[in-house]
Image (cartoon, rainbow, N blue to C red; front, side):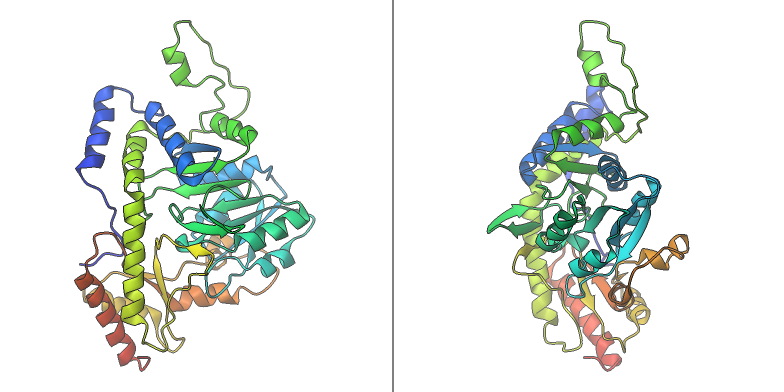
Length: 383
């Protein structure tokens, strides 16, 4: 079986987790603090705050932007449903904007058209690890005085050229950037998330909220020679990352350059294997972007049945995924307000498929995937 994805782990991660287990301190502690410092250094962010997952990160980021009941947040429908859900958690309304068909990221012109006096934030996504048009989106946000939050769940290790210089996604350029360490992502801690920001005031809020609003962390109390009574002056949440996860994450960070380089090589090889199929749309990487290739997404002709292709490839032992979902098509968002057509989002969901991509993938695996896809498209008259 060729899976759609596979985490890149070995005894180094197991040994890191074992050391934490034997230390006796399992929850948020020294390993989390070290992981935060190292992630901030990687991205060039002033602060990084680890949390339990990226959905939590998005929720806290929106709260930090002041999003609340009655507000609107502009976001893509074409994203995993956690993007829209995080807006609902704040009591706000997601206003879905359409995407650019080439990159599957938010179209800045559609965002600008969706802004009203109730717009409190813009939540953009670096979809499948491909950096969005951050410069154009920031121009829209700044022109209207609206904070921009980056859903960088898939974008650890991706780079973007800003002001003539390359930098990692997550510096951040907006108010906050949010990352995921789910096993489908390029590095993993099992579950887990991270927020990066250049605002120390926001970082303090995030750290307070993630631990029940506790004004003195337990790491400080346990290391003190004096008895300390903590207080809870705000309503917080339990969003902590464990030291076991952080230890695994620190080991994964060391692998990140190797992982991204390998995934970029695999993406390049796919382009060679599939580039001569006229009716197959290959991923587009703008000249100002360097994707980590968290996913490799191809676009089928509208004459080809997406599910049939996927099922026939699965019958041959090759897993695929459909194009990224559209939240507005789910029952929980069926009545969500929309300001304009979401046609490009719907076309992407209905006619794109994600091909297997992971570090351990061999050239033989790739050839098998490419041959199977070519055969399916030939059978449908599209290759």
